[in-house]
Length: 300
Image (cartoon, rainbow, N blue to C red; front, side, top):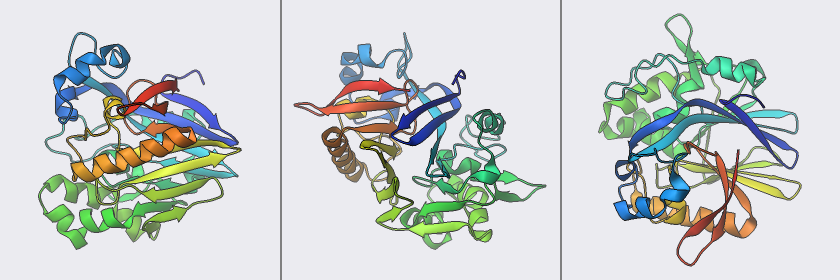
């Protein structure tokens, strides 16, 4: 597909589209993954620069992106990015953003009215933004006929039942009220726990740590496999050193344990690992190493 913002690959009979909302250098690597000391980044520079770490600098290169999974006559959208027109004070990249993501969806041949399922791997603001659009001053679901699959643990934590994550970050209330609550009001939200099978190819599994309800989406078709890992990974250094959690992980120790478990299965079963935010190639095969894992082959 000849479009830098829209790319594709296949898993058996399942087509996967990568639709990039934004990509570029973001925060220093040591800020993004504080558990990894500077020598980790420098020792792997050849594998990171320029796609995952800026050349001549120390900022990590990341992407905001959505994955569209098509198979069995069904269209599934995985994570929905930041969205437009959101009040996100304190985050210049997200605050009142105005981008052309709907046009990118259209160029990929995705009609919001024909989306069957929306998967939010977790409920952080850069994974739920395009859940909704502004319709004359009211937030309404972007995908009017879709089931929105929301991790119940995150809905409790980030929603009113959990005091909008205990009120520690005012932004969590804003995110929930403009990007999650409207889906509930429309009757399109489906809360799930532990495991949820979408169809014969797709199954959601709990993968807590980054957030209480963080999840992964597994794809299997004709013997080929992939796992969409959401924010278990922000940078390839976390594959090379899976003990390193990001600054956004609410429970870094649990996130590290979950990351190790998911990567071990991916290596053993030859699952293509598809993270939410890698700035270069969007998916990678991993292999077990003496310490951690290796980056075997990039895709997309």
